[in-house]
Length: 274
Image (cartoon, rainbow, N blue to C red; front, side, top):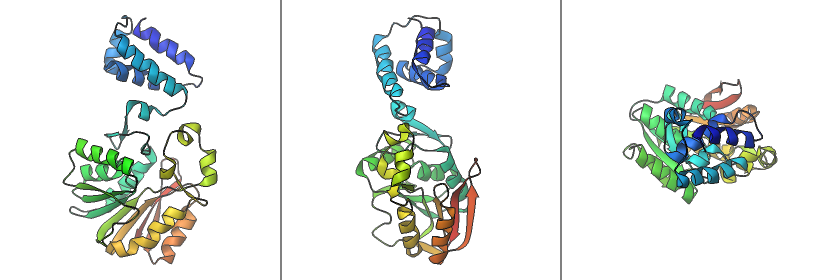
């Protein structure tokens, strides 16, 4: 079989359209070659059976709906590559807005708390682009392992410290900024999500409870005592939750509440000041 034939045959076996990028990524990852090398080799015979078997195993998982990021073990976010597995949420492009807005207000030396850090993509993107110190808090022990590996891989151990914990540190350490991309789906919304999300990504990282606002409320209600005077709280939230989120912030005494829209024009991030 030629490399080009493997690509074409695989493309025919996927029911959905526009899957060529995913197949190409699986081929290059399985054979340890670059995209440029693949195109140079497209008319060459495949002689490496172990690599071909590796591709077929992962291709079968792709056909069942497993996200490409879990098959390759990594995902790009904010021009950085992060290790991911099924213990952590796959970083989303819309979450880059949360990084953008945090970078816009942070200063060198600021202490930032990242609640529910997961893979650490938010914390590490901030550390790589600003001289800040981040406490990355993660409840799940397996997710914490992924987080720690990413910190080490990016060489940011001096800036980003990973801790296991739920919502807030045990000690009331003051931070200049608190950020979080918490679970914000309701139980009903979870049942309506696409198969690639519902069957493979960690439920606990996506579902907050019956209303979807439970974790957001807990963060908003507890953030005041962990923020410095005039400290900022920045949160990502779900579609159509902006009015409830801004109301909760106002009720807890936050001021200068500002909403930001993602590239699709959806209110996605809120910034508020203590």
